[in-house]
Image 1 (spheres, rainbow over the protein chains, first blue to last red):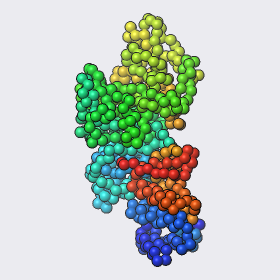
Image 2: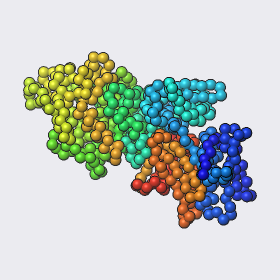
Image 3: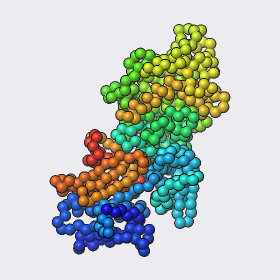
Image 4: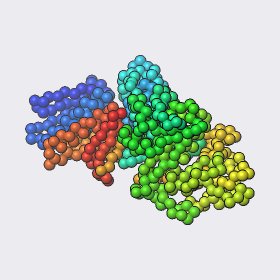
Length: 468
Length: 86
């Protein structure tokens, strides 16, 4: 058995003899001819599958994809055809001013996208490059519409070239930025443009984010960079397994079910967490974490709600200071954060809020360290001394058999004299904890990291969901 | 039944065994192999839809559209297919 790979040049149907032939090669002049024959004794299944094969040949020709034909040695009778073998994979349609991602493996950090037509080559620098994907927040309209040849290129490295059809619009309501691990229930992060806000007096108001699509794209781009490209590496451990989706649906009125956030005085915005799962299901998504992006400029302080794991579904057991706990594998209410489009993009707001949102109401909350109090419940990253004058205990906690020390100096920022709270030791003891006031970092807030306990605990918690 | 979502990275059709194999996943190197099998004993109406599903997988592959394949847990045979609005 031999295989021949090339572009489909021509297809000829001859129904009177139950046959079709197609030419495969770099040009018509140098193409080889292959054929399929379906004789009158063929079963219905054979007939139909041969027609499937022919249909694949037709589609590959239309798309400009090469095919690989299996055939006996010294015979042109096609016994099988495959198509689609490239080393990169554009995700969804290429549309001007819309999100665009291209996946692959081993993509260099300096990779750019090149869109080539007969008239031009347009180079696009992605907003985020990871080894498994490049991400563009808004595909530049300077790219020619119609058929382009797309490739990724970096110093000393070039991907396969793949034909893509670029259009000028309309932009999609739901955009998959990365489809996630090919398994049921991948860990899913969803960014939604919030349709409605419940105001402080209780009225429902349209969220202006739905009139600012460029702002939404910019903010999502910032969030992705924040989650996956700052110094903290928590999510880079497994971001090639996450499903990442955006929803921007400007047809939605500010009804109760579409109102996903509410104002809290003086300037906070908070998600209406119980509406998120039903909202996501309208777009066929089950999210683990939802970022509700809003356009308020009066209530633009970000907040987050913990996840509520589904206690009726499987979980992974662990111990915390000897007490039995679980990491739930499935959420009943996703973790969530309300983020304003005008957030300061030099900080760590998305990652900080993710830290809250990815923790759990009942089996471990991650709380702010820049305040002394606690809203109650089981908190992973904060404990309290009996008296503010008591020394900070050396040992903070035992998580699943491993001891974690306390931070005696509160990030070097020092505990205010009246504070009773204390915290786990950082990974980077020279900078504030990512759950603390990272704005006090002596250099760049985006260098700040979680503490050792949160990093270990959240790694296990996300792994429990990734492996469900 | 389980659902697996992803892009069709590669499709292979082998008429002699009335089968189409689809590699589905987020990247060309991270896929799960699924298949559409047209069995001889299958009623004509069921078979016609199975073949049409194979055509839909081919269309999704060349247009870079995500698909949701429906299959039994721990079984790679595709029993149903969904293509999302986006």
